[in-house]
Image (cartoon, rainbow, N blue to C red; front, top):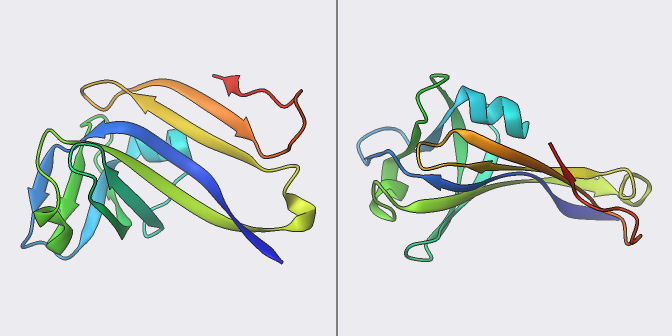
Length: 133
């Protein structure tokens, strides 16, 4: 059996641009991709905190250090610059890999700069506390 598990998350990022005329995707600053482990072309879910819109798209590599979080294509009509979003990436794990799995959560400031990283284990053991990096 496969389990769909959170692999990585960028929490409370700010939308910096929307372009409905661009081929659909989300552009994310390369620094945030490196910190979270999310890859270009990987599927992500985007959850808009301001209006509850939710959609799935794929990642385009953004220029490092720019703080860009750009929504492109039709999904650009679901959000607006300044909105806060959660970007989540999932992966599928077998039973044998569940206890070793760790999910990475990157927290950002108002300019989409990494402020903290938290690593969560996927076990039910109480000793498996989140690790703040």
